[in-house]
Length: 153
Length: 153
Image (cartoon, rainbow over all chains, first blue to last red; front, side):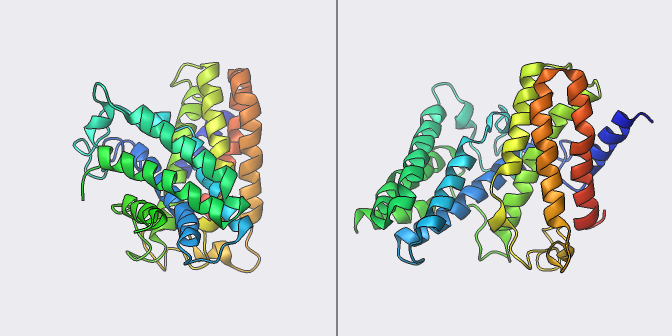
């Protein structure tokens, strides 16, 4: 077997155990986007904990969480949201089909999130008050998008 | 309620429906790391598909996938691997406790993955042959780490 095929086979084998596209519609995309949401939530747990006084403010830790939040927000997710990959296609997803509907505001909401995460990245290491001031827009961006485009609890 | 508390409450509410730390040990961390693995697998699907000739080579698409692979590999995952967050603690994880054992080679394997993804990022847009040449080390890095540190199928 040529070396390339061996490498390709090894790469394929390396992904067994992970979700595959065959398992269920959009399973890989859904797993990836939910994992990235969880990653963001972990960073928000650090930032929100400091904002609420539940975690002592630490400039380096706050900056790291804000850097991570921004990195995860700016990670290219364009391939993770194929049309039709909503809750109706696969109940593992909590995405509403409204995301892809005519006149959807998903682009505006994504931009609001990116802007808020960018502002948080500039503020978080500068002190507890700047961090607190940046929390509102970030929490608002999360909540606005979830309210519009996520299956209600 | 002060605006900050409203923002913090909104942020907390924004994460309902996502896994929470209370659900099961390390559930958020496991979801995040598995999602990032799925994200990498999606990029590898593009790169591997081109290497195997299943997808026509497209320099821009190859470069984008390689950029995304590197971004996901260099995303700070330090908080996603707390000691004890292995398969024995939560069967949703396929991570072996060997990751955290004395003398573990996990650091070397992470570095091999970062080096291979960096090389792929430099190669993927330059042509099909450079992409193919970069596939071996990337597939090898994925497979070596999975073989050593993932629950066998």
